[in-house]
Amino acid sequence: MRKNLGNRDKAMRILLAIIAVTLFFTGMLQGIWAYMALAAGGVLLLTALINFCPLYAIFGIKTCKAR
Image 1 (cartoon, rainbow, N blue to C red):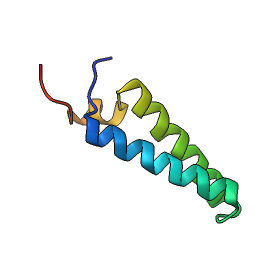
Image 2 (spheres, one colour):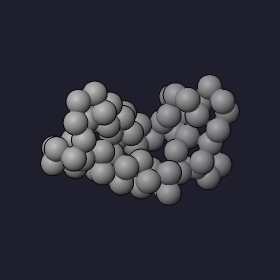
Image 3 (cartoon, rainbow, N blue to C red):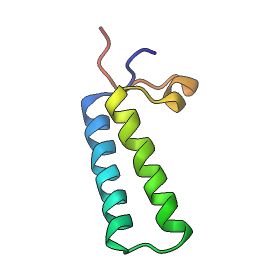
Image 4 (tube, one colour):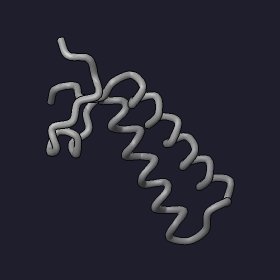
């Protein structure tokens, strides 16, 4: 796996993950929407931590600077 996430993309994913998890634990979302937000937040956080997005790889997208 090669890095395909830039710093801005990574920061945005972490921010969105924090928002999704917060919505879940504060009870602002109910039912299936709450679990979907939690799952999406988990995926966003995981991809940000490993600097790799499988969908970006499939579509050939790279937001990091080329070396």
